[in-house]
Figure 1: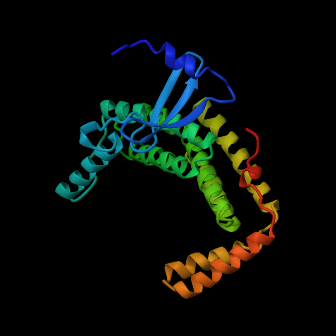
Figure 2: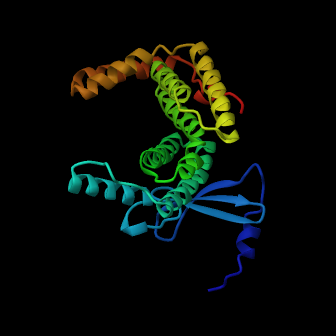
Length: 262
């Protein structure tokens, strides 16, 4: 195998306005690529970003959560379960991989996968917060929690806005603001900065959504979801027809317009 990637880099010259693409691998799966000034990064779109299966699991987080479940089953309690520094380092390294991927996913508007990846890191934070046996490890990770809560909330709110469910988006952002405000203080510059920045960003986004004109299809889409949940398919079909007719009469709007500048 030729290890020289000069031809690959020449084929995709660096351009700050064209850095991201999704391509099909030889086995048919899609992968996410990012062109950097000195090379190309490649991420799996699903599963762990580097494609590895630590301990035969989907992720290190899954492995350690499985160990917790086994401990709980064996002892009848979580008391005594702990994560050592090696466990923490493995989780921290994995969290960084997910962080790099969800930054790119957010940039291209893949809010479903952004929500999934930030949820992974929030589960990771929760495990460390509860069971890390070193306070320094706990502080090292949790100082970034306001930022991840914010990214998760924005992604989920955008998903709701794409469905024209404005009230659901507002609830998501309001809950995230409360969660960050209620966080126990961590005495690091990163935590103080991320808490203030995330609160400001979430409040600005909430304000823009609140001021955004309601779509006439919003209440119908809420009714549609309830009809589907209730398996009232005749009602659901009727609602879909009404929504389709209204959308044909209403100019489209972009949910991305509500995102404030960083």
